Amino acid sequence: MSLSPKTVYDNLQQLEKVDRVKSATYRQMAQEILADLSVSQKWREAIAERLNSANRTLGLQMANENDSY
Figure 1 (cartoon, helix red, strand yellow):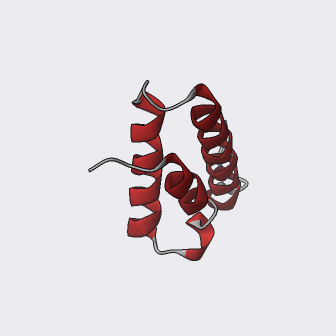
Figure 2 (cartoon, helix red, strand yellow):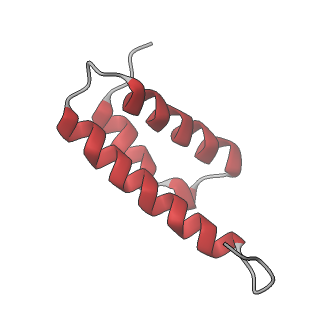
């Protein structure tokens, strides 16, 4: 099944609105797009930025005062 970069990009905007399983699926789809060299550099960069931002947000939500990075 071929993934649409636009769909993957749009799905990443929904990560905080869906359950954990769907969120993990969307993240996996993003990783597949990032690894696909037939997808344009522009799309891969946009998806990477959105995924990175979502991962930072998740890290902030999951971390507590006893965690160190």
